[in-house]
Image (cartoon, rainbow, N blue to C red; front, side):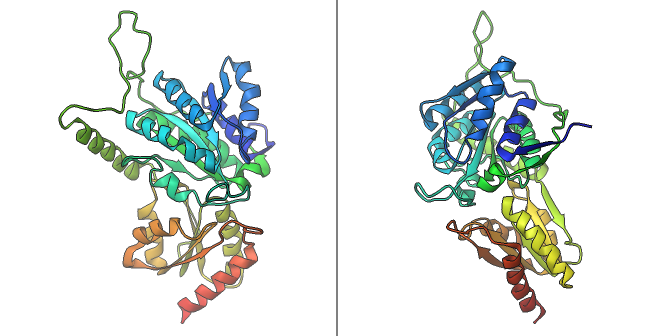
Length: 356
């Protein structure tokens, strides 16, 4: 058995990247994710890897694009306003079908905002924050262990589908410490990178691009990307359920809020309320079918987020007319994290309304 460690979530993500074979990192300091580049700046040189502190977030994402086009495993990380600066590069990588991992330890906004916990980057992450009709897989860890495990999974998804992949955490998950078991990288069959560019040396030329000028080429390319996203929806949805089998009210949330909601649901169960928790781990592709089944049995869903309502839109689209959807949000600010007792009060009210 691997040794149990006591580490920060940010450090766990960096450790997962190293275990996954990432040897190239490009980034720029910004709170609350700077532990990631700090860790990799120390560890990558020991592994004959490369750490580059770029001149800006824009420089970092384009360095990731360049390294990825050579077929190596590479990564960048930032926090909300820094991720905004990276969006054009992420769009280019999606268009050129280049694998790479981007970690967002999100903070509050809009604008400069603050460094407290927030989930206000949901729209930007799952709807394609840059130009063009694209998506990227988005994974939402809710523990230090998942920061490690899902970072490794992100690299595999990136190579499997030739796409950027985002790990969406927040300052709670990134900065907190808890136990981690650093498991070995899972074995997964991945395609060869026959598309990667290289020194020509008499071999056939390889071109990585997102520019298609021939008649009908760009339309065909976009439909092919769309088909890839549909495959992701069928094969790559991940979710977690707790006490949903007999639930009359489903509470759903992602990331750090899901941890608080789990405690609140357990407290509600102790009071005799039939309440369950549905946690999406993949935000894109969103686990629509699994949520629809759980919500259909319960008849009512309570969405909890650290914002004024973003994931709630995907919940409504998933559930349709099968269940009533209500929302409880806490936008960033002093004391923006709800307590389990606060959520329990909300659950009581929604459950009583259901009973009536």
